[in-house]
Image 1 (cartoon, helix red, strand yellow):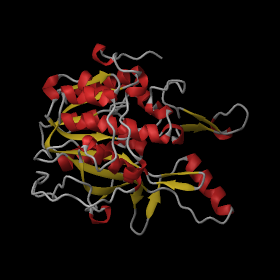
Image 2 (tube, rainbow, N blue to C red):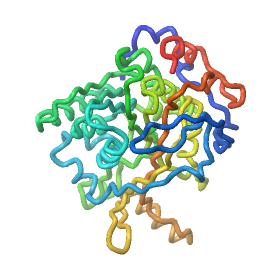
Image 3 (cartoon, helix red, strand yellow):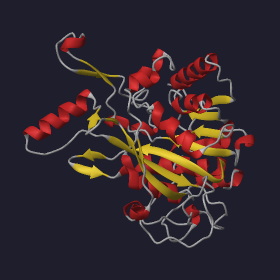
Image 4 (cartoon, rainbow, N blue to C red):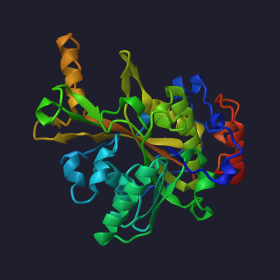
Length: 369
Protein backbone atom coordinates (compact mmCIF):
# COMPACT_ATOMS: atom_id res chain seq x y z
CA UNK A 1 0.00 0.00 0.00
CA UNK A 2 1.49 3.34 -0.99
CA UNK A 3 1.41 6.38 1.25
CA UNK A 4 1.98 10.02 0.47
CA UNK A 5 4.55 11.85 2.54
CA UNK A 6 5.44 15.50 2.06
CA UNK A 7 8.81 16.30 0.58
CA UNK A 8 9.96 17.96 3.78
CA UNK A 9 9.84 14.65 5.63
CA UNK A 10 11.86 12.56 3.22
CA UNK A 11 15.13 13.53 4.83
CA UNK A 12 14.25 11.46 7.89
CA UNK A 13 14.71 7.71 8.04
CA UNK A 14 11.78 5.43 8.74
CA UNK A 15 13.19 4.72 12.20
CA UNK A 16 13.28 8.41 13.07
CA UNK A 17 9.55 9.08 13.05
CA UNK A 18 9.25 8.43 16.78
CA UNK A 19 10.29 10.23 19.94
CA UNK A 20 11.65 7.72 22.49
CA UNK A 21 10.18 7.89 25.98
CA UNK A 22 11.79 6.27 28.97
CA UNK A 23 10.33 3.28 30.82
CA UNK A 24 10.70 5.31 34.03
CA UNK A 25 8.32 7.94 32.68
CA UNK A 26 5.78 5.33 31.63
CA UNK A 27 5.89 3.57 34.99
CA UNK A 28 5.93 6.70 37.17
CA UNK A 29 3.35 9.11 35.79
CA UNK A 30 2.31 10.43 39.21
CA UNK A 31 5.35 12.68 39.66
CA UNK A 32 5.08 15.90 41.66
CA UNK A 33 3.74 18.83 39.61
CA UNK A 34 5.44 22.16 39.28
CA UNK A 35 3.29 24.97 40.65
CA UNK A 36 1.75 27.49 38.29
CA UNK A 37 -1.14 29.90 38.19
CA UNK A 38 -2.25 29.12 34.64
CA UNK A 39 -5.66 27.57 34.02
CA UNK A 40 -7.35 25.68 31.22
CA UNK A 41 -9.68 28.44 30.16
CA UNK A 42 -12.43 25.79 30.12
CA UNK A 43 -15.85 27.38 30.57
CA UNK A 44 -17.05 28.18 33.19
CA UNK A 45 -14.04 27.22 35.32
CA UNK A 46 -11.40 24.57 34.91
CA UNK A 47 -8.82 22.70 36.94
CA UNK A 48 -5.45 24.29 37.39
CA UNK A 49 -2.94 23.35 34.71
CA UNK A 50 0.46 22.53 36.12
CA UNK A 51 3.56 22.08 34.02
CA UNK A 52 4.00 18.51 35.27
CA UNK A 53 1.76 15.48 35.68
CA UNK A 54 -0.64 15.71 38.60
CA UNK A 55 -1.44 12.83 40.95
CA UNK A 56 -3.83 10.75 38.84
CA UNK A 57 -5.96 10.06 41.90
CA UNK A 58 -6.75 13.77 42.15
CA UNK A 59 -7.95 14.23 38.57
CA UNK A 60 -11.64 15.20 38.26
CA UNK A 61 -13.81 12.33 37.03
CA UNK A 62 -17.08 12.35 35.13
CA UNK A 63 -19.19 9.63 33.50
CA UNK A 64 -20.50 10.07 29.96
CA UNK A 65 -23.71 8.19 29.08
CA UNK A 66 -22.67 7.54 25.49
CA UNK A 67 -24.25 4.15 24.74
CA UNK A 68 -27.94 4.66 25.34
CA UNK A 69 -28.43 3.59 21.73
CA UNK A 70 -26.39 0.95 19.91
CA UNK A 71 -23.37 1.90 17.77
CA UNK A 72 -25.32 0.93 14.63
CA UNK A 73 -28.21 3.19 15.64
CA UNK A 74 -25.86 6.09 16.28
CA UNK A 75 -24.44 5.79 12.74
CA UNK A 76 -27.61 4.88 10.82
CA UNK A 77 -28.31 7.38 8.06
CA UNK A 78 -25.41 9.59 9.15
CA UNK A 79 -22.42 7.59 7.87
CA UNK A 80 -21.85 5.77 4.57
CA UNK A 81 -22.02 1.98 4.66
CA UNK A 82 -18.27 1.60 4.03
CA UNK A 83 -17.64 3.07 7.50
CA UNK A 84 -18.74 -0.23 9.06
CA UNK A 85 -15.53 -1.93 7.94
CA UNK A 86 -13.22 0.23 10.06
CA UNK A 87 -11.72 -2.00 12.78
CA UNK A 88 -11.86 0.52 15.62
CA UNK A 89 -14.59 3.06 15.09
CA UNK A 90 -15.10 5.68 17.79
CA UNK A 91 -18.66 5.88 19.07
CA UNK A 92 -20.26 8.99 17.54
CA UNK A 93 -21.82 9.84 20.91
CA UNK A 94 -18.38 9.91 22.56
CA UNK A 95 -17.01 12.38 20.02
CA UNK A 96 -20.21 14.44 20.16
CA UNK A 97 -20.11 14.65 23.96
CA UNK A 98 -16.49 15.81 23.98
CA UNK A 99 -17.21 18.42 21.30
CA UNK A 100 -20.19 19.83 23.20
CA UNK A 101 -18.29 19.88 26.51
CA UNK A 102 -15.05 21.50 25.39
CA UNK A 103 -15.90 23.75 22.42
CA UNK A 104 -18.32 26.41 21.29
CA UNK A 105 -19.99 26.74 17.86
CA UNK A 106 -17.59 27.91 15.19
CA UNK A 107 -14.45 26.65 16.95
CA UNK A 108 -11.98 24.25 15.34
CA UNK A 109 -11.85 20.50 16.14
CA UNK A 110 -8.99 18.26 14.99
CA UNK A 111 -8.38 14.50 14.79
CA UNK A 112 -4.81 13.42 13.88
CA UNK A 113 -5.94 9.80 13.29
CA UNK A 114 -9.32 10.46 11.74
CA UNK A 115 -10.16 6.98 10.44
CA UNK A 116 -13.58 7.03 8.82
CA UNK A 117 -14.14 10.61 9.99
CA UNK A 118 -16.32 10.24 13.10
CA UNK A 119 -14.80 13.23 14.91
CA UNK A 120 -15.09 15.43 11.83
CA UNK A 121 -18.72 14.52 11.15
CA UNK A 122 -19.77 15.08 14.75
CA UNK A 123 -17.94 18.41 14.76
CA UNK A 124 -19.66 19.90 11.72
CA UNK A 125 -23.01 18.45 12.83
CA UNK A 126 -22.53 20.49 16.02
CA UNK A 127 -21.69 23.66 14.12
CA UNK A 128 -17.93 23.48 14.57
CA UNK A 129 -15.16 23.54 11.97
CA UNK A 130 -13.07 20.40 11.53
CA UNK A 131 -9.81 19.10 10.14
CA UNK A 132 -8.32 15.61 10.25
CA UNK A 133 -5.29 13.58 9.19
CA UNK A 134 -5.48 9.92 8.20
CA UNK A 135 -2.67 7.52 7.26
CA UNK A 136 -4.58 5.00 5.12
CA UNK A 137 -5.81 6.28 1.72
CA UNK A 138 -8.95 4.15 1.82
CA UNK A 139 -10.17 5.74 5.03
CA UNK A 140 -9.41 9.21 3.69
CA UNK A 141 -11.87 8.43 0.88
CA UNK A 142 -14.48 7.10 3.33
CA UNK A 143 -14.08 10.11 5.63
CA UNK A 144 -14.62 12.49 2.73
CA UNK A 145 -17.75 10.57 1.76
CA UNK A 146 -19.03 10.90 5.34
CA UNK A 147 -18.36 14.64 5.29
CA UNK A 148 -20.22 14.92 1.99
CA UNK A 149 -23.17 13.08 3.55
CA UNK A 150 -23.14 15.48 6.50
CA UNK A 151 -23.17 18.43 4.10
CA UNK A 152 -26.21 16.92 2.38
CA UNK A 153 -27.94 17.15 5.77
CA UNK A 154 -27.25 20.90 5.70
CA UNK A 155 -24.09 21.02 7.82
CA UNK A 156 -21.85 22.95 5.44
CA UNK A 157 -19.16 24.09 7.87
CA UNK A 158 -15.48 24.15 6.95
CA UNK A 159 -14.05 20.64 7.11
CA UNK A 160 -11.19 18.82 5.43
CA UNK A 161 -9.14 15.66 5.80
CA UNK A 162 -5.47 15.39 4.85
CA UNK A 163 -3.74 12.17 3.80
CA UNK A 164 -0.47 11.49 5.63
CA UNK A 165 1.34 10.26 8.72
CA UNK A 166 0.28 12.17 11.86
CA UNK A 167 3.82 11.86 13.18
CA UNK A 168 4.67 14.47 10.53
CA UNK A 169 1.98 17.02 11.48
CA UNK A 170 4.18 20.11 11.08
CA UNK A 171 4.77 19.15 7.44
CA UNK A 172 1.18 18.09 6.72
CA UNK A 173 -1.11 20.85 7.97
CA UNK A 174 -1.14 24.39 6.59
CA UNK A 175 0.34 27.08 8.81
CA UNK A 176 -3.14 28.59 9.27
CA UNK A 177 -3.99 25.81 11.76
CA UNK A 178 -1.04 26.46 14.08
CA UNK A 179 -2.34 27.48 17.51
CA UNK A 180 -5.97 27.56 16.32
CA UNK A 181 -7.44 24.21 17.43
CA UNK A 182 -9.81 24.31 20.41
CA UNK A 183 -10.19 20.54 20.81
CA UNK A 184 -8.49 17.38 19.59
CA UNK A 185 -10.50 14.15 19.76
CA UNK A 186 -8.71 10.93 18.88
CA UNK A 187 -7.74 7.41 19.93
CA UNK A 188 -4.53 5.39 19.56
CA UNK A 189 -4.66 2.34 17.26
CA UNK A 190 -5.08 -0.96 19.11
CA UNK A 191 -3.50 -3.14 16.44
CA UNK A 192 -4.17 -6.89 16.88
CA UNK A 193 -6.47 -6.35 19.88
CA UNK A 194 -9.32 -5.07 17.70
CA UNK A 195 -12.29 -7.39 17.28
CA UNK A 196 -13.80 -6.21 14.01
CA UNK A 197 -16.80 -8.24 12.90
CA UNK A 198 -17.56 -11.95 12.84
CA UNK A 199 -19.32 -14.51 10.73
CA UNK A 200 -20.70 -17.67 12.39
CA UNK A 201 -22.54 -20.78 11.32
CA UNK A 202 -25.77 -18.89 11.80
CA UNK A 203 -24.66 -15.92 9.68
CA UNK A 204 -23.16 -17.56 6.61
CA UNK A 205 -19.87 -19.19 7.66
CA UNK A 206 -18.99 -21.72 4.95
CA UNK A 207 -17.28 -24.18 7.30
CA UNK A 208 -19.48 -23.62 10.34
CA UNK A 209 -16.64 -21.98 12.26
CA UNK A 210 -16.32 -18.47 13.63
CA UNK A 211 -14.23 -16.11 11.51
CA UNK A 212 -13.15 -12.50 12.03
CA UNK A 213 -13.19 -9.91 9.28
CA UNK A 214 -12.65 -6.16 9.10
CA UNK A 215 -10.38 -6.45 12.14
CA UNK A 216 -7.07 -5.18 10.73
CA UNK A 217 -5.75 -1.76 9.80
CA UNK A 218 -4.66 -1.91 6.15
CA UNK A 219 -1.74 -4.19 5.33
CA UNK A 220 -0.20 -5.94 8.32
CA UNK A 221 3.15 -5.75 6.47
CA UNK A 222 3.15 -1.95 6.62
CA UNK A 223 5.51 -1.22 9.51
CA UNK A 224 4.93 2.51 9.10
CA UNK A 225 1.42 2.00 10.49
CA UNK A 226 1.36 2.38 14.29
CA UNK A 227 -1.24 -0.38 14.47
CA UNK A 228 1.41 -2.87 13.31
CA UNK A 229 4.26 -2.04 15.70
CA UNK A 230 5.06 -3.16 19.22
CA UNK A 231 3.74 -1.60 22.40
CA UNK A 232 6.77 0.59 23.14
CA UNK A 233 6.98 1.92 19.58
CA UNK A 234 3.27 2.64 19.69
CA UNK A 235 3.80 4.82 22.77
CA UNK A 236 6.81 6.54 21.22
CA UNK A 237 4.89 7.23 18.01
CA UNK A 238 1.87 8.51 19.90
CA UNK A 239 4.13 10.86 21.87
CA UNK A 240 5.40 12.11 18.53
CA UNK A 241 1.84 12.77 17.40
CA UNK A 242 0.89 14.56 20.62
CA UNK A 243 3.95 16.79 20.26
CA UNK A 244 2.61 17.93 16.88
CA UNK A 245 -0.88 18.30 18.37
CA UNK A 246 0.47 20.63 21.06
CA UNK A 247 1.61 22.98 18.30
CA UNK A 248 -1.80 23.22 16.62
CA UNK A 249 -3.67 23.60 19.92
CA UNK A 250 -4.46 27.09 21.09
CA UNK A 251 -3.38 27.96 24.66
CA UNK A 252 -5.94 26.39 27.00
CA UNK A 253 -7.12 23.99 24.28
CA UNK A 254 -8.00 20.41 25.18
CA UNK A 255 -7.16 16.90 23.93
CA UNK A 256 -9.71 14.11 24.51
CA UNK A 257 -8.24 10.63 23.99
CA UNK A 258 -10.42 7.54 24.21
CA UNK A 259 -8.37 4.59 25.39
CA UNK A 260 -8.78 1.36 27.32
CA UNK A 261 -6.47 -1.08 29.09
CA UNK A 262 -6.07 -4.61 27.78
CA UNK A 263 -4.67 -7.91 28.98
CA UNK A 264 -1.55 -9.45 27.47
CA UNK A 265 -0.67 -12.95 28.78
CA UNK A 266 -2.96 -12.28 31.77
CA UNK A 267 -1.13 -9.03 32.57
CA UNK A 268 -3.15 -5.83 32.60
CA UNK A 269 -1.60 -3.16 30.37
CA UNK A 270 -2.62 0.22 31.80
CA UNK A 271 -2.63 2.06 28.49
CA UNK A 272 -4.63 5.07 29.80
CA UNK A 273 -1.93 5.95 32.34
CA UNK A 274 0.76 5.41 29.72
CA UNK A 275 -1.05 7.77 27.35
CA UNK A 276 -1.05 10.40 30.12
CA UNK A 277 2.73 9.93 30.30
CA UNK A 278 2.93 10.45 26.53
CA UNK A 279 0.96 13.68 26.89
CA UNK A 280 3.27 14.92 29.62
CA UNK A 281 6.26 14.20 27.39
CA UNK A 282 4.61 16.31 24.68
CA UNK A 283 4.16 19.30 26.99
CA UNK A 284 0.47 18.71 27.76
CA UNK A 285 -1.11 18.51 31.21
CA UNK A 286 -3.78 16.03 32.43
CA UNK A 287 -6.91 17.76 33.74
CA UNK A 288 -9.59 15.04 33.77
CA UNK A 289 -9.91 11.26 33.48
CA UNK A 290 -13.45 10.47 32.42
CA UNK A 291 -15.51 7.34 31.75
CA UNK A 292 -17.39 6.99 28.46
CA UNK A 293 -19.92 4.22 28.87
CA UNK A 294 -20.08 1.44 26.30
CA UNK A 295 -23.09 0.03 28.13
CA UNK A 296 -26.65 1.30 28.28
CA UNK A 297 -27.79 2.77 31.59
CA UNK A 298 -30.98 0.97 32.62
CA UNK A 299 -33.09 1.59 35.73
CA UNK A 300 -31.09 -0.73 37.99
CA UNK A 301 -28.06 -1.86 35.99
CA UNK A 302 -25.72 -1.35 33.05
CA UNK A 303 -26.56 -3.37 29.92
CA UNK A 304 -23.18 -4.21 28.37
CA UNK A 305 -22.80 -4.22 24.60
CA UNK A 306 -19.85 -6.62 24.31
CA UNK A 307 -18.63 -8.02 21.00
CA UNK A 308 -18.88 -11.71 20.13
CA UNK A 309 -15.23 -12.30 21.02
CA UNK A 310 -15.53 -10.39 24.29
CA UNK A 311 -18.51 -12.49 25.35
CA UNK A 312 -16.79 -15.71 24.27
CA UNK A 313 -13.61 -14.79 26.17
CA UNK A 314 -15.50 -13.92 29.35
CA UNK A 315 -17.48 -17.16 29.18
CA UNK A 316 -14.31 -19.24 28.89
CA UNK A 317 -12.58 -17.35 31.72
CA UNK A 318 -15.55 -17.85 34.04
CA UNK A 319 -15.53 -21.57 33.23
CA UNK A 320 -11.95 -21.53 34.51
CA UNK A 321 -13.03 -19.84 37.72
CA UNK A 322 -11.94 -16.28 36.88
CA UNK A 323 -14.75 -13.79 37.72
CA UNK A 324 -14.20 -11.44 34.77
CA UNK A 325 -16.87 -9.12 33.37
CA UNK A 326 -17.61 -7.52 30.02
CA UNK A 327 -15.99 -4.16 29.37
CA UNK A 328 -18.58 -1.48 30.06
CA UNK A 329 -16.61 1.70 29.41
CA UNK A 330 -13.63 3.40 27.82
CA UNK A 331 -11.37 5.82 29.65
CA UNK A 332 -11.29 9.32 28.23
CA UNK A 333 -8.09 11.09 29.12
CA UNK A 334 -8.42 14.88 28.96
CA UNK A 335 -5.20 16.82 28.49
CA UNK A 336 -4.74 20.55 28.04
CA UNK A 337 -2.18 23.01 26.71
CA UNK A 338 -1.08 25.52 29.37
CA UNK A 339 -2.03 29.13 28.79
CA UNK A 340 1.49 30.23 29.65
CA UNK A 341 4.54 28.56 28.08
CA UNK A 342 6.62 26.51 30.46
CA UNK A 343 9.85 27.89 29.02
CA UNK A 344 11.49 24.53 28.50
CA UNK A 345 9.88 21.88 26.25
CA UNK A 346 9.01 18.74 28.23
CA UNK A 347 10.85 16.63 25.71
CA UNK A 348 14.11 18.47 26.41
CA UNK A 349 13.96 18.56 30.20
CA UNK A 350 16.57 16.63 32.11
CA UNK A 351 14.14 15.09 34.56
CA UNK A 352 11.79 13.18 32.30
CA UNK A 353 14.27 10.86 30.62
CA UNK A 354 13.36 11.89 27.07
CA UNK A 355 15.83 12.00 24.23
CA UNK A 356 14.65 13.85 21.12
CA UNK A 357 15.59 12.26 17.81
CA UNK A 358 16.71 14.16 14.74
CA UNK A 359 13.11 13.99 13.56
CA UNK A 360 11.91 15.60 16.78
CA UNK A 361 14.39 18.42 16.33
CA UNK A 362 13.05 19.01 12.83
CA UNK A 363 9.52 19.37 14.17
CA UNK A 364 10.51 21.91 16.79
CA UNK A 365 12.40 23.89 14.15
CA UNK A 366 9.16 24.53 12.29
CA UNK A 367 6.48 24.50 14.97
CA UNK A 368 7.56 25.31 18.50
CA UNK A 369 4.60 24.88 20.83
